[in-house]
Image 1: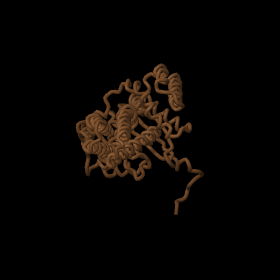
Image 2: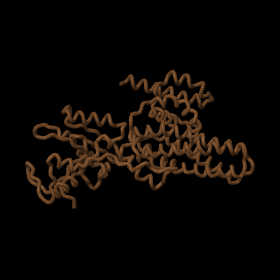
Image 3: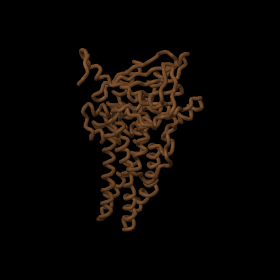
Image 4: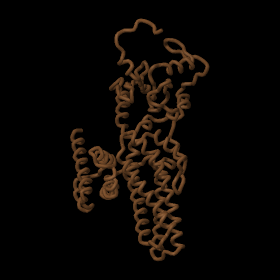
Length: 409
């Protein structure tokens, strides 16, 4: 493990050095041999960490932004070699699937219409050719919706996980593209014979759009898919309609897989009890009483069955971690960001196999000090039934001093 960490630190150091060399004036061709020799299979996560580190060290975002096109070109060869298995982005309606669908339409617009019309305009700046190009850039403005969804729906989730540098850099380039489209549209609307200036600016804009497509699909989207949980993608998908789409519509409605927990219980011979009583070893309770008891406990409870399906959670007045009802029937691994799945899987395996009976964590969350406990749930014969997560704010308990023997007035 230490060897991996040291190697990672070394690669991070090299990556930062390469960017600084580019910043100091070296060309892509000058740094590329060193990059290819020393860096193998660089990951999108390391690129994000590198940009974050440079900003933390004091390099202004604006300077990194100017380097963005250059270092993307340097990284392109290695990033494209990363092997990525089938992911949710391949499912029609998933936000990333829709983003990529829009990128294909943008490529069609640029390659099939804008570039040929620029060539026609270069030959003759007739009113007809000026008008065609103006219409093209009015259509290209649709990219604003694509960028707005990315910036207002995707970036906030990345920032929640501490990934701030890539969104800042990318948002800056998005704004440059927006400004460029507006400028070309204005130049064409008030065309004064400045043909070369229009052609130069138009080519700059479409080159930036194409380069942004590369950065999204080879840096941003893989990083986001590695970070966000399924519920977070679902929220992005649900709120995307308010902003709208660019040149196309989602290829379908994305429905994450959910298991019907009531049907599953019936198949296992566990019939629901409504209005009656459930007999326990130490008493009887109605469904209403059971629900009220769990919701009154000063802890949050979530139960995941032996198959890894979320089956129940309590609904106390002040839950520490939000639990939408949509989580019921989902597999446990889909409730956590992919980057933390190795930890989740280790906890589950240790509890399932009996290596451990519980696992504890404690974290600070705002003004709360949260104690998170995972318990293996077993029957009297020792058979594994599932995992119980119990979460509690223990800060008030830690603050208890002395004794209390009297009632409050």
